[in-house]
Image 1 (cartoon, rainbow, N blue to C red):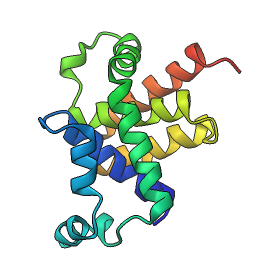
Image 2 (image 1 turned 30 degrees about the vertical axis):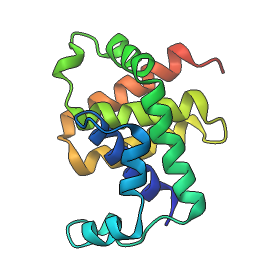
Image 3 (image 1 turned 90 degrees about the horizontal axis):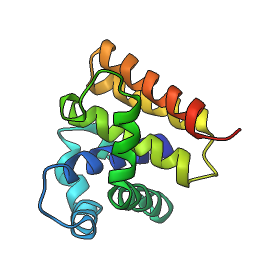
Image 4 (image 1 turned 45 degrees about the vertical axis):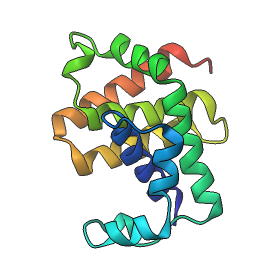
Length: 149
């Protein structure tokens, strides 16, 4: 499993956290199993191969980080979503942005440009072109305004 696949799975799990009553640990323990992947593989090729130890740790780190820093990340999204109330932003789009922002803020080994490019590419699979532009604009503004070069 490559990192962009692991990142997309982390986005799926972050999205699921938006509407489940499970704890982040319970969700990760349930979803990051060979059995769970096998059950989902027919629906989505993304789940054809369960994560290895390194990818599983990466997914866990992202999803737990997004959960722990959710209020902070949502604050940045709202700040740069000019003219939009946070509640109007699609849940998938907010999950994509949360994961990218977490990587930018807390995972120094991932270049900012890579986090943004991957987020945009993943968003293209799930969102309209207008929403993809919106995501790209917010992430670009966030990096320009918040991240010291």
